[in-house]
Length: 261
Image (tube, rainbow, N blue to C red; front, top):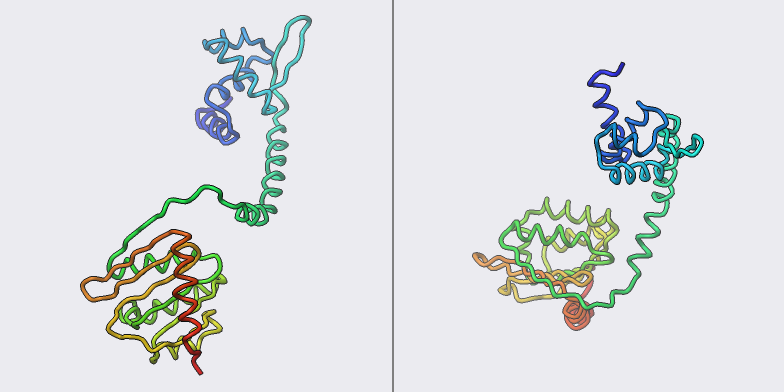
C-alpha cells in the first residue's frame, strides 16, 4: 500500500513529466480501475466528461495511456511503467541534439539582418558605480572596443586593480581594444601588457583640462564626463551615431596618433 509520502512523490514526479493536475488524477484513476471508459472515469472522478476526455487524449499523446477495445466498448488503459524511461531517453537524446547545434544556430540567428529601425536608447549613469556599469556593458561587445580619452582620470576614480581585472576579463572574451590615450605612466603600463590585454594603444597629446572621453563598441557610444562633482556617463545605443563617431571622430584621430615606441 502507498502511504501519503509515496503519493506526494508520485504526484511530484508526474508533474515533472509535464502532466497537469487533472491528467495526474486521470492517470492514477486508470491505474486503480484498470481498463476504463471515459464515462466510467468521469463518474469515478466526479469530473466533467469533456474535461476527462481531453485529459485522456493528452495522456495518449504523451504515451502514458492507450486505447483498447472490449467488444464494442472503447476503453483506455495505462502503458507499462517502463514507458517513463523510454520518454526520458527520447527527451535526453533530443536535448543532446539541441546542445550540439546551439552554438551554430546562435551564430546563424545573429546573421539575420534587422529590417525594422531600432528606437534610440539613452541611459545615464552617475559617479563611480555608473562608470563601472558602463564598463561591464562594454564586455558584451562583439568585435572591438574603441576608447578615446583626454585624461587619465579613469584610473584615479576606479583604481588600477579594477582596470587590470577589466582588461583581463575583456581579453578572455576575445574582445580587442584600440585606445587613444594621453602620454604618461599608465599608458606605458598598458602598452607593456598589450598582448595579454589584447589592446593596441596610441598616444596623442591632448588638452588635460578637458576631463572627458568616450567608449565606442558595436552600435553603442558611451560619452563620459569626468569633471569632479559632475561625473556622469551617457550611453547612446544608435547605429548611425555610433557609425559617425567611429568613422569621423575615432578613426581620423587614430591615424593622427602615434604608437608607443
